Length: 302
Image (cartoon, rainbow, N blue to C red):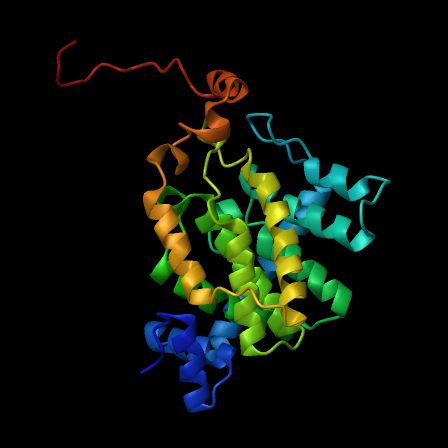
């Protein structure tokens, strides 16, 4: 039997007892659950990563204007801006995360990892990481396996859905997946990988889901960019062996507790937060369909 990803402590113990790496244990789980093979699983992840890279490319090269008008080629504007706040690499990271998420908001093809609303975070981080450190696609696939294991535990102990746990459950989980993948790909050990997850979650706790007009555009797109930055900062902290103090399993439990106690208006209902501001309401009035022709019921005789 494979490990069922109930906790990070259990995941570590399982791998140590059986002499498995973290990615190997995820492959074992996937083969058990889906009757697949290691080669098929890796091939599927490689294909998914190809879609992620395509989304980044599309968002930086094609017209990205959403029907609402709230998304208007923001990624290209960031990517091509002459002033770099920190470094060209940071500028690329932010613009790539924006790009992939804008593709989602403009009805393009993305990988929901773990959700469509957070679909810019892993592409932005992994494409940039691969470029900076000259990593192979095979190394990135192993990073994605790490991210998958992290997501399985968060789903078990908290949630991955904004409608259940707020935006912390979506962008927070994606950032945690990315930070763990970054640390793994750069040679970090298990404790460092899990500490990166803990630090990331601590930074994302309490983030509400408040989409303006109920559309996964504002503030979702810019949150993908900020979450990508948090993933890198958490990885840097963890690789330096700076402890998050609170164990990763307890951080995830806190995420679940906060999500459960969060008012429903802050969980993807577009009834609170930014969606409830004057501007948010004005946008909703403008972009939502108001006049729908109701056809008579044929059985009513009208």
